[in-house]
Amino acid sequence: MNTAGKTASTALVTGASSGIGAAYARRLAKRGWNTVLVARRANRLDDLAHRLRAEGATTVETLVADLSAPGDLARIAERAAGEDIGFLLNNAGINGYGPFAELEPPLLRKVLDVNVLAVTVLTHAAVPAMLSRGHGTLVNVASQLAFAGSLAPGPLSERAVYGGSKGFVVTFTRTLAAELAGTPLRVQVLCPGLTATEFHRSRGREPVPGRESAVHEEGGAPVGEVIDASLASLDAGDVVCVPGLDDNSPVTALEQAELALRAAARR
Figure 1 (cartoon, helix red, strand yellow):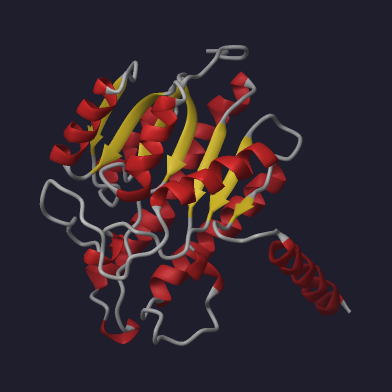
Figure 2 (cartoon, helix red, strand yellow):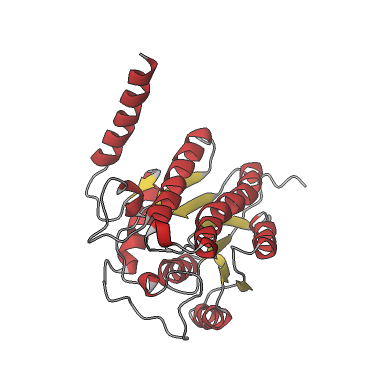
């Protein structure tokens, strides 16, 4: 079906049961977006949906899914390809922290399935319809740890697989943005640092138990500031958003370093 010219007014948010995902969904709902909330914890999704409806959100849909499960991922990808999806926030992620040599293979696989495969599959599902309509926004959540590959653990976590997965998200999103340059789509990779969520309270094989969110002991930046930075960067047309970064000169320096590396290699 040709969807050109139609307005897509629904935002699909993964990892919506807490933290950045839940807060971003609330912010989008306040801006008038209908929302599709995706996460593993049905009770958390139900609570958020009830809150959004009480705050005046027009349409809220909840989809309970584990994005490391192929059947669940396929189901959410089908929804992401819907004609109404105009904003995709790939926020779901797990950390799988621990010494690489001791990392349990099922957890290693789950980190890659959620942080890499799900982001790729859902993006691939949503982008064609967005291009056909001539508008759409894609935000993939990475991490400042994607830029910390040379830093040894302590005080940073043992994070080889997590850091590598978020490095993929950064490179994938930047390269996709370059490919889509000149189209009406807005593409961003959001790279928060330590944020005041419950992310560090679980390695990710199982979600944090309980119905109420609780911030991990490490604290971090307020979630609202991360979302403020993301939305401001979208308005400015920046592809890489690092909350707390006063100016984009480090990102420009990264781009220049990449050019220098390729030029030197060709010589």
